[in-house]
Amino acid sequence: MSHERSSRRYASAKREAKTAETRERLLAAAAALLREPGGKTLSLEAVAAAAGVTRLTVYNQFGSRRGLLEATFDTLAAAGGIADLAGAMAIPDPREALSALVAVFCGFWSSDDGLVGLFAAAAGDAELAESLAERNERRRLALAMLVGRHGGRVEQLQRDIVDLLFALTSFAVFHMLRSGGRKPDAICALLQPLCDQALRGNDGALSLALRDPGVSAGL
Image (cartoon, rainbow, N blue to C red):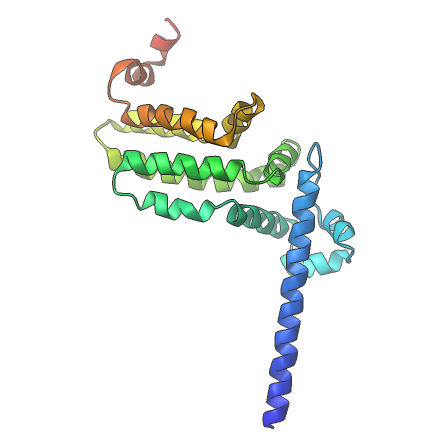
């Protein structure tokens, strides 16, 4: 009996290792598709073809196209250091925490060209766009926590500041600035003081513009 149990455990461990290896290969194939110029539609069929397996194999691993999208983004996020966000949010001073958050996202946005393909593909893919929007809301929530921790403003002004910070830390802004030839570190150095000014938002033209958008438009 002991020999039989050992054999079963060995066979089970071997299957699990094979399953994990297949999953890694499929996620690598998905990321490679996204790195192709112009972005590719990330489908079970496309990933299966790229990995040299059947569509059923991909389905068994991820359950659905949405599952594949989520897993691919999780892989890119893990490789891009997004886990460092927890450390940034743990910094007591909200201004220092925001500076660290900006650095985390600049590092993440620059970590893999697959992200460029992912966002490009989302332009014509409602399901992918929905998935990315949900993840972006996590960034908004983190920013709202920092703005709330800073405190000292009326509720509407706090919401305005969160929206401004959300825009400044977005992939779209990062990619636009990088398209001008800037290095990621230079973009980070450009965004950090802007985000700090937005977070403080309690003096000067920024606060006035946020309270009365007509001022900045010259109305």
